[in-house]
Image (spheres, one colour):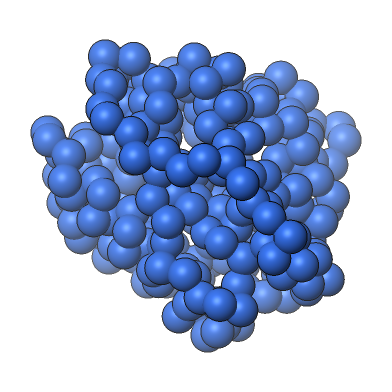
Length: 239
């Protein structure tokens, strides 16, 4: 749920005319007041946030700057602000109503919410960590998006992408129903996300499965590292 700018809706001039799939504003404006009460919070969003926070907590030194792109109502950004009180954290989202709800909950002085997407970020700003939880499917040109993530990171930084993955026929079935309810986002396999990150210049990082639920598609965390750091991967084979 991210927004572009410029003359044509959904285009990001500052990121190489990086279009988004469709016009999601009305969809997410509708869901914003209900978002924190959706059943998917319990089975997908909360486990996602817990996994991301636990993963980052393992890393040293702690990040000084974090970007949460597609932050929704700010639940993950707020958790990260509590976990890393010394870090400057930016949450950005396409949907104004999502950002309004996030701002109502924010009591952290170093946490800032921005209505918009990559092109609304402070010029020249670089981050130690970029997290994209359940927003990556909505970028039409995912290769350019991955390249933008790479350029926005400091050397030694990391990007963490979490999304429903189209790894097999079971995933494809459930993602069909996702398309009916919220959007026409394109959900990739774990292997394809890794491939895009490698093409953008990242080294492979951790791959972790978010707590599985039988009536949901598989959800994975895929990490890319911007040079200066390589770790042993626990990759899965692309189904």
